[in-house]
Length: 170
Image (cartoon, rainbow, N blue to C red; front, side, top):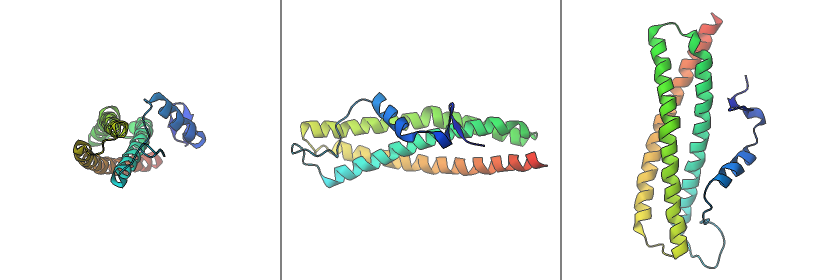
């Protein structure tokens, strides 16, 4: 079975076109890594910018995975007959909805706002704002906490679905 995101199969999915479309829908921002004689950028600022972009990429991946998990859960929910298993189906449904609809979107919004501070510092050529650095550390901690929670959910979800596949063969 080929995973499907929306109406497009993942095996034929044009990720570069998807990324370009997502980028075009966002506000145009000053790039912290563009070459210009006007900006003298602290290496730590560039490093933080790259880390932020990596987190944005991870969030997009997780959002796509959640769509796949939703479809997988719908396809396999009918294989469970025990009350405890049906409760787990509801539990995973709630987690997928919560993570995909609130948490990931909220974190993406915070990261984009955070990147706006970089653009502001570049525009004003003022890299002395310590607010950005404090915000960055707190946001990275929040993302790392979510990543751990997401990976735990993913691991238990995949184990649960594997159980459904065993039930299907019986």
